[in-house]
Every structure is written in C-alpha cells, then in structure tokens.
Image 1 (tube, helix red, strand yellow):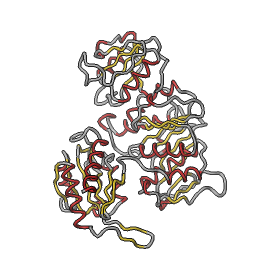
Image 2 (cartoon, helix red, strand yellow):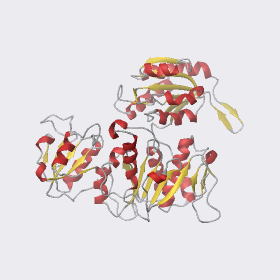
Image 3 (cartoon, helix red, strand yellow):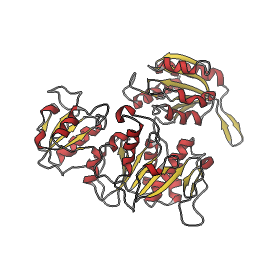
Image 4 (cartoon, helix red, strand yellow):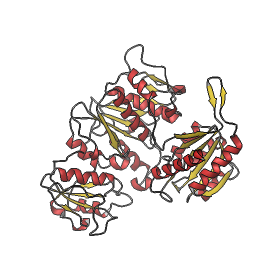
Length: 472
C-alpha cells in the first residue's frame, strides 16, 4: 500500500468506494489525513465496506453534502463518477463551488512516488493485455515493477517503489481526465474507436481525454502510438514518437507484418527483427500483434534488451477473459473473450478464428454488431443472450444461423451440443499444424450488467459451465 502523507492533519474527501476509493481511504488515513468518505450506494449510518484501519485519524462517513467543504484540501474522485457529461455529479459541482481540486488515485501515486519510472497505457481496446504483457516482460527481465490502475489493482494498493522501480499503469479515459501533474516516461496509445460517448459528450471529448496520456512529457520521454492514429492531433511536442503497427511495414518503428515482429527503431544497420509471434498461443491475431509491438517498444524504451523481451513473450500466459483458451474438448476450443464489451473488441476475436460458434449479447453498446458484417462468413452459428438478443437477431437474420438462448447457461450448452454434432471428428494433424474442429467463442460485444456484476463475473461463469461440460 502507498502511504499518502501530503494531506497530513488536513481534510480530504473520497467519493466512490469501489476498490480504488477504498484504497485511497486507507492510504490517506495511514498518512494522517482526516478523511470524509461517501458513495451513492451508502445510506447513513451504514459502515464502509471492508472498513479500513483508522490510523489514529477520524474517518467521517457522512453524505458529501455535509462535508466541511470550506476546509477540504482535495476531492479524490472515483473514475466511475461523472466529471462532465451528461452533467457533473453533485459532488463535483460542490468541489467546483468551493475551489476544491478534483483528482484521482493515480495522481496521488505519482505525487507520493515521484522518483519511480511510469509507463502508462491507454486505448479503446487492448490496453489490459498490453499492460499485463509489459509487466510480464519487465519482471522476467529482472526489473522491479508494479502493475495496476484500471487493470484491477488500484494505484494506491501497489507497493512503494523508489528510483529504479517501474509502475506499469493501465489508464482509462475516465482516469486520464483526473490527472493534474502525472507525467508518463513512456506513454502508449493503442487505438481510438467510439466508446464511452455518454461520458465524454462526443467523439472529440473522448479523444481529448485519451490525449492526456501525453500531457507533460518532455524530450527524454517516449510516446508509443499506432500508425493509424493521426499523430499531429495528439499534441505531442517534445517526446520521442515510436510508431507501431500490427500489419504495415514502418521505415522507423516497430511492426508485426505477417505475425513477425520487426524493430526498425535502432540506429544500427541490423535492427532486431524476425521475432515470430504466430507460434505464441497467447498472442493470437493481429490485435495481439499490435499489443506485442506496443509492449516491445515500451520495454525497449526503459532499457530491456530485445532478446529478453522476446523470450518473455514466449512465456506470456495471456489475460483472463481476453481470448482465453479455457479447454479443448474433442477438437473444439472453448474461448473466453468476455472482456470484449463492444463490437470493435469482438472483431479481433472473430478475425482470429474460423468455424465459430459465437455466444453474443448482453447490454448493447451504440451500433450493436452492425459493423461486424465482414466476419459473418466465419460464424457457423450464433447463440444470443441478454437484452441485446432481439436486436442482434435482426442484424444476423438471413446472414448467420442463430438460436435465441436467453441466458449464458443455455447458450453454452447449446453451443457445445451443436459444435460437437457438427465437428466431433476432433483434431486433425496436417504436418506441423493442427486443424481444430471449431471454436465456441464467448465474445459478447456487449456490457455485462444486464445479467452479471461485471465482464469478469460473466467470464468466470462461462469457464465454470465449460469445465462442467469437460468433466461430464
């Protein structure tokens, strides 16, 4: 845990008591602050969930409207609380009224651990895999590092690191909006496609939030940016830009054409190249080749040797809920891609496989699955669940065979049954390559909140259902 001493003997508000909020309360109390803490889900005098140690200071569990705003030194805001759109949350309006700075937990991490190196990763899709891969590479290379942020472990729950330590931090657009002084030594922007428009007002607002990853970078810093993003619009002034691509050759950059990673950033005539990614199961598909290129560029920027990076990539287990191979049953692979909460994320999984028995649906995002038409020929049968089932059925009508299943439990059972009936001949060995019968793919292209607590919960349920089938 990080101990925040900046506000010792001063009053601080923490609003939003999820994992990040609770970590902030603990860190501030440990540093001697007097903390006001509240969440819209609380009703006085209910206690905080998992009450943190008081550390000798007062913890006031009272509604934010009753806080001592005139003497509050900061408001630590949960990323999930609306900052601007569709309207500022009332607690934000109060902070503005009393000129109280609104910050996030990553800001407190940076202020408390200023001597460490910071790698920040953002993008609409792929940031969790890239963050995890960078952390894995650094650890395998013997670099002292901590991994967290939007990925799952709150920034203030990480261990303190001094000079020589590296924080690898996944940053959502919500978190980026709360930064005031954070400077990333290496900033990675993977992609930008429409998402969270309701929170940012429009696409311009979403892009503006993502651009904050490059704020305050200096000439000694590195910006890793996909070649498909217009770099002149990102406001990068002094940092060295390293371009990356999953499929296009770049004269000066890192790219993975045809699944082979090439490093053309070196001034040496024999730049590191010919690092095949196609044999690494956890890095299947072009989207993962992009993730690998970004991770490679970021790790090279902090001094890790190319051969160590590639060796670590080969032992990378992948990310849970992101194209996670759960089990293979009679040649049919069962893949958990529950983290695909929008169509763009799902397109990566559909592009990576053939003969797909697709489980899709949930709480739909704008546009639904209308943009996935180019992949419909790869889908043998779709199994639809949740609120979006009717909408998705209309999109698939006459193009893809589908079954309305309602729940994930029914969908997994029906998909396994149909896949086994169609493809029960198992794995065929053709030379050095194994041809699989098909893929039962949970890649919902939807949020999970209609039937599940989170995409993690949805993915865990899928894995449990699949393991039951495997054990029967």
